[in-house]
Length: 336
Image (cartoon, rainbow, N blue to C red; front, side, top):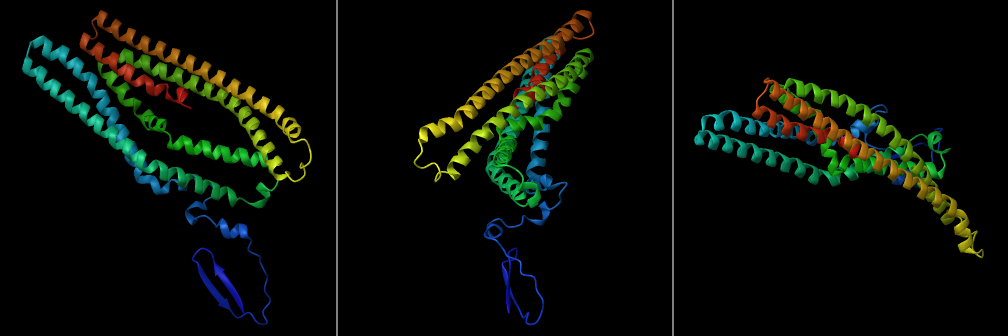
């Protein structure tokens, strides 16, 4: 008689195998603890996509709310333009009151949508972090043995650190700005309605900012990769010390620790300092670039008023829209 246990469905089967040739497969304790991931994660090409399949509705809600927030944010500057063009020109208090009421309603709607978006991230963020960690680590644990047996301890530790960085990326508060990035087109369309030339300046700035973001991402990645390797080496040294603690008993422990950790800690500190310098330099250059492009867009709008192709109300609205839009342009560079 043979007893077979189904780990997936938690069922036990008893089969009569008398006189039948069988192959004995041993189930290790490792396999009992880390069971095979769910079938939806078995697609080797899209397993990361399936990690988020439980949160499709939340992601769609975040996209919709981000779009509505961008629309309401773009409507606010039109209030300034309407005050100049209608209320002041006609000296009508009733027109001013109606415009003010409309602006208040728009501001309240924008606040409510932002609150709804933050609530979604707050309620789902913790669960999403645990879900990502479990699924990604589970996928790594079930990689083919040939892909993991040759990897050193430091490589395994660095891989787990990268998983933690990915988890922080998708659950941080700054992640909301990634949902806002595609809807910068709403601000650009609003600027184009009031001042087409200023919109062209903003578009040119977008291209320049994108090139700068790609370059800054490259140099930042180069710096952080060195730092990650150095930190992984420190973790590897700790791992080796803890694994061989019985062999160093009786030896001068302080000297052993200094010998093992002095070089790796020094390299880790130097690389961390280099990353900090690169990060501050990139942020300073990116902030200056944002200021320069925003100022150029505003100057273009002012020139339009001086040429008579635009009015003062449209110019003020354009200025507000430009400064509303540019923080999103700089997000990829300022919030890695």
